[in-house]
Length: 357
Image (cartoon, rainbow, N blue to C red; front, side, top):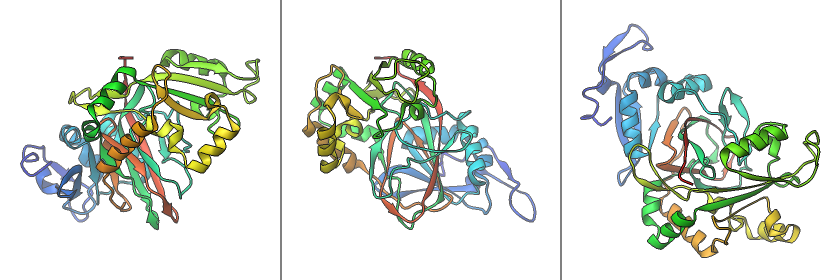
């Protein structure tokens, strides 16, 4: 959607402009730029006319948006008429079809409307490290979008990073070791520390959980409550080996794609880490990550991974009404601490399954 790339886009009627409808070319309807001259992530698309509806414009420019998303990894739509949460949902549906349910979740969220959810509901003072959504699973969305309904008084940005550059900046020995061994995620649900399994799997049925895990290649073990009816008293442990790196299905580029640095206990504050290790055996920790063969991941390696994410991090302030569309494999995201009220909602689409495990 640079000036050259938009010349051949179809023209459309701008029905939302007051007074009378005006026929304008797509080249005249939007302009593009970058937030930082040295970074091509994200591409910023802004309307050149008032009251340009985002979903309506996107419907006539789907192929161009897709191409630019693969090129840049993320697009920030700023200054459009979104139409609230419903309009945001329609925008995602226009580009990518039905939205995905947030199943096998790892963080607390609330359903806003349909399959639109709140962003991760961690305390405002906490920093959420950069990550690709559901990279701790063998199934993930290819697209994820964020809509800023209300920006925080201070902070609350959604930092992003180019997953291709993260992959390239890591030492080749680290990449090769992870690519070969992969990552094992161990989760213990219940006990009042992490999410209960009922919330994670969005069901109260043990049978449904077992069926889901069987299909997803997840090992599970019920820790208490032998009866299938004794759902809420039961605790659950799961193990799953997942990819550490992945090739993008369209661009074929390799990306760093896992959440080892989030799940590993070294991600916690030292005091919290010490308290958990005092209260739990290592195998009973709410969550942890290992190499795929079960061997421990070295803290120094995880520190290097975090350094590479930090090196590639791009931060920009939200403006209310902003919509950030990311290719979930090409771009990682996180959240900075904030003060005041903040409301950013999220939608995901285009399910993808990794078979190479």
